[in-house]
Length: 305
Image (cartoon, helix red, strand yellow):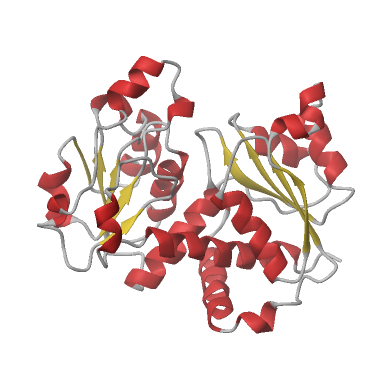
């Protein structure tokens, strides 16, 4: 049984195939409008979500399938103490594929270990978010036409940001990629990621607290919010939450072909005025999330009778 828990479980060939299919869906959506007729997706969201949950649901509906599930733990038997493994095994009796989000790292892996249907990790704590990374990769592909020879700036919460961790891992497999890691000292990329991925592969990177100083170098700027839900201390969150706010003034020295991405939701780390800049691609990124999840669902359901 094939599952998707970590983006690194997908080969670059598989990612390329899904990106090609997502682009084909964008070009000819009618061709795919009934391809999942009679199939059901279960969305098991033990943690709040807007974009991820709704994009999975929209993806399945636009493939002609159906959706069942819940959007918070209190709406499920988890509120009665049922284990994740039992919930997933039970729901597998009713659905053909499961998308699961959970606040605890490793929950999707535990659930998949007992599942009789494919499980897609829709985010597990601060650990992994592979379908957001696929969304990011599709957006980069559509904007740049490549994954190699890019300088990628990641800004904000690089310690707890699961989207950051997954994107660094995914992009590390391509040639001549450089990372510029922009964060307060307290929210730097975890050491294990620097050691096991960036340094181990000999990838060029710099760590800095100065967003404006590195702006002219960047081909991609990946903004993130400081996540209140990942902090143990409200005081620490309040102290760090406004560390980086992207404004039009800070883009003055940026490349004309810069692409600004953000996994959303944003709080105030990107000024509303930036939305009108043609380099702002985060709402296109949202739409791309639906298309790549359509391609992913098809990738996993093909061959399953």
